[in-house]
Image 1: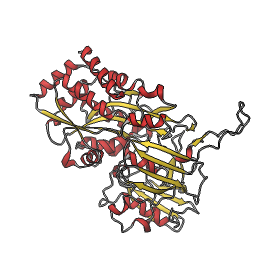
Image 2 (image 1 turned 120 degrees about the vertical axis):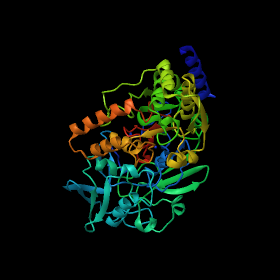
Image 3 (image 1 turned 90 degrees about the vertical axis):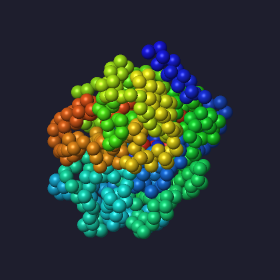
Image 4 (image 1 turned 180 degrees about the vertical axis):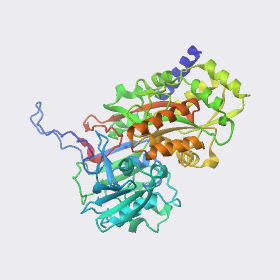
Amino acid sequence: MKKTLSILLICVFALGILAGCGSSGTTAPTTSTTPTEATGAAPAAPKTEITIAIQGEPTTLDTQYPDDGNMRTITWSVFEPLYKLDGVTLEPIPCLATDYEIVDDLTWKFTIRDGVTFHDGSAFTVDDAVYSINRIIDPEYNSQIFSDFESIAKAEKVDDKNLTITTSVPDPILLKRLTKLDMVSKSFTEGKTMDQLTQVANGTGPYKLDNWTRGQYITIVRNDSYWGEKPVLEKATYRFIEEVVTRAAALKTGEIDIALNMYPEYVADLPKVFSGIGTETSWVRFNQRSGIMKDKNMRLAANYAIDLEGLAEALFGGYARPCEGQMGRDGYFGFSDKVEKYPYDVEKAKALLEEAGYKGEPIQLLSERGRWLKDGELTEAVAAQLGEAGFKIETKFVSWQEWLDTLFDPNKTPDMQFSCTSNEFFDMDRTYSALVHKTGTQSAVDNAEYNAMIEEAKSEMDLEKRQEIYDSLVQKLYDDPFAIYLLVLDDLHGGAENLNWTLRQDSRIYISELSFS
């Protein structure tokens, strides 16, 4: 069995070869203007424009609606929230709000920043902040990231400088939630359809939308009316290049300056490598509402069938690590040390399939290619290992848009769906609220006990008690898994030799933090 697995992984490995608010917690290195020793002449002035290859085209630029990483890579530099994350400490710091006050267990008061304007020249006001918050929690809007903000009951204007946010329960991570809630202009947004908002953007960030040429690229340019520190770079172009080999070639020839999500086997050939522990965790969602994966033994068998260590080494060469029997990683609040990763045990998987009464019925595994590092190859390897354990897997790859539509439509949920999830709050509430709670936008689970535990932890202000709840929940989700918990991926990007870039701990990419020597 091990020999067969090794051959499989080597084959998959071989096939792999043929994303601010002013200064967001990190400072770009200073560029050099020292004359060269060889000629005595001053070097050419540093570049003021940058080209970045991303894996796919955004579905929309309506920053409050989709759970779309391709979009956020762009909108991080165009829109801003009330609070942002410091790129090093991961603590919330002021952005479009200057401070806050906790009025009572359910009420927070925020003061907005003076002198902020949207890209159309209109002033950012309390009314815009209230509108932005109430819009994203409006059930009729049906935001794909609603679960990140479901503790928010409403926002209300106090006066021209202040607003309040009322939560339905005490919320220990409200400030972290707000770091993902971008502010939009009420007058610009209100009354427009979702289609009308798709290819427009009116934020307050240091860069503004310049052009979207469908199927090719998006450009943003420096906002010279920005309220904060003026960025170094004047323009950024995001090219949509799905194939990693094409991104690598474009970087080597100088067509682009950054190639996002590179493969480990390209590292030796890249002009410069930027890597660090990431926020993405790969997983395979089970449909627990209907179909064959409702059986707990089927779901357990799938976890025992996967050689996590083998996948991490063969596919990612040290740039990924196995999940420890749960989603996320050490460093997230709520991560539990009470469980370990499932051992690779094909015979146990087969026994569990027999106990479940599985007769070889076809099981669909839906996936996509190009959004995450080696997502297609990882899907294929997982499908092959499940097949070795006795599952009859029918793998189907679809477009990014179809994949998204399937993920968020409970009426389309397949038996299994490959995905990656990030945790921008570094708190397990984000993961469990989105992936397990019945209201979660990516959940295919409806378990009253789990729902109650997630809700209890969400509102528990005592950190020790919160951790105890998560420890108990993690154990339950280990014994009765909602997914195949796969790998925590490192960020791995290629860059031009003269690019100055310090990766953030939250994996966000702000053009204002980049420069050239």
